[in-house]
Length: 208
Image (spheres, rainbow, N blue to C red):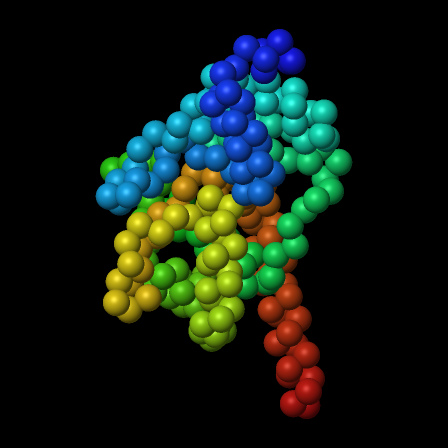
């Protein structure tokens, strides 16, 4: 591993360091990133990791992390002991579930099967009316906080800003399939529904 690293140029060593820090901070790297003009281009950081995957793999392994890739679309790290997990607010978790379902639905008809677009109004509509994940519109503070967290981890990216924030356009990236895996989505969804039913039962008892 050291020999490979020592063969890097100064610029490549800096890139290696920057990418490691980004993976520690953001967890996910997608094959594509949004450019300044709003289009999607190949992510050079992703390509650098792909070319030097074994080196990155060994480095993260020394720190107790496992480097993985899914379908050559997403590279990510996970802690081999299951520690260092991010504790998300309930609203953020519900947003992730909605985004995963929307991703799967839209991908079937999308011209680009790796990523799909949505407006904020569509997301909240789905959560409120289609999926029954929320009973009322969350506060702007809570909404913005959850969106920023999901955006930070390269799961969604902002593609267009509108005068009305509900018309802001975001893109769901393929990293959503790792953040909310096939095995976990039904389990989490059912758990949330059970919690909602329990809350309803408590409310009924309060009335009685």
